[in-house]
Amino acid sequence: MSGIVVVGDAALDVIARHDKPLPHGGDARAKIRFTGGGAGANTALWLRHLGAETTLLARIGDDPGGRLIRAELEAAGVRCAFAVDPEAPTCCVVVMVDGSGQRSMLADRGANQRFVPEDVTPEALAGASHLHLSGYVLLDPPSRAAGLAALAAAREAGLTTSVDPQAAAHITDPAAFLADVRGVDLLMPNTEELVALTGSADPASAKELLGTVGAVVVTAGLDGASWVDAGGVTSVPAVEAECIDSTGAGDAFDAGVLTGWLAGESTVDVLCHGTRLGALAVGKVGPQPV
Image (cartoon, rainbow, N blue to C red):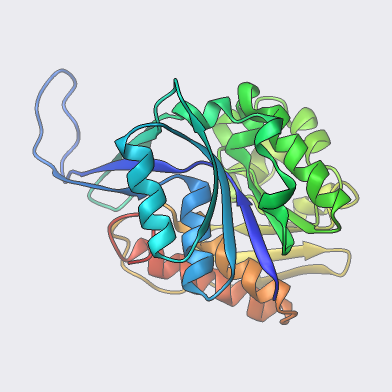
């Protein structure tokens, strides 16, 4: 398997785990830690964890946070094709994780929001066979043009492509989003994103997306995952796991699916790779492999 380029956010995460509901205007105890984050960086690190040669294409700030993120990624073996923004800070996300392991996020995309087409260079794509794009890049208007440029450059270079929509709440114009991802080989929504795109939580509803994209991979948490293509719908159950922190589970799932698919494995095996990695992700604090 040749290299994989991931296009998406690199961030610092502030994870606050709390057991009780947050009192409006009051105080609550929490366990707090700092870690690397960002959907793009998360997927890149899980890909590298699986042995894939991985490049992360992103924009960071010229600040201590950006330098820390780069150092950690490079130490893990991820090649960083970063544009450094002299004005905007590195992305930072406050992640609030409740007692059931479910997360809510407050995100400041910072420099990632200023990602521009000129940041997508031929050098970043050199040696790659696949490009994976985080939907945050497309769904935030300031960075959308750069996301489209990345997909166009990948197609011109003969790379296969995948897109994870990432955030159902930001899919306010489904038709426009689908126009942006037309021609992508794999679209990788979770159930909420599938509802935003098709109006239905049934994985079979993804059939209406075929023709716009080559195949759809739907992750449904405790209900497992499904692969939808012209041959029909293939589903596998979830892997049992204690949910400590759901942050980044979808990013890990993407990495498992991509490595299996690019290696030419069966659809069932590809889905099982994804659900296994998703289970590993929720069983620990933080969105990245240790």
